[in-house]
Amino acid sequence: VESILTFSVTVWFSNITTQEAKRSERIVRTASTIIGIKLPALKEIHESRLKKLGLKILKDPSHPANSV
Image (tube, rainbow, N blue to C red; front, side, top):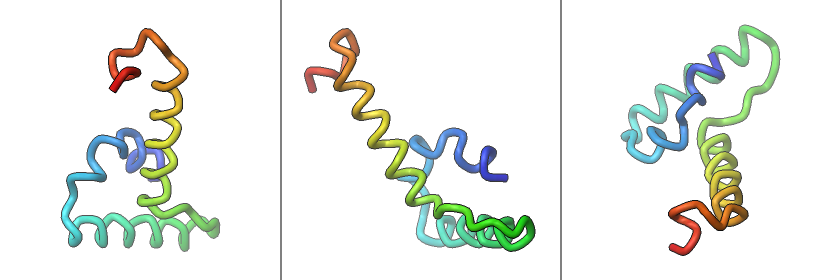
């Protein structure tokens, strides 16, 4: 479930409504309960992936967004 929800979280998470975010978090909590492992919140995953993407862009001088 996590891989399905987080595959493109950097694209879709910023554009979901509060209600959709709550539903998504409920799915993650339910999956966490079922498998017995605490899963990170989608917001945490989103922020982490955005930071990684930003650092990757900053390290690549040939990336079009590097000079922005």
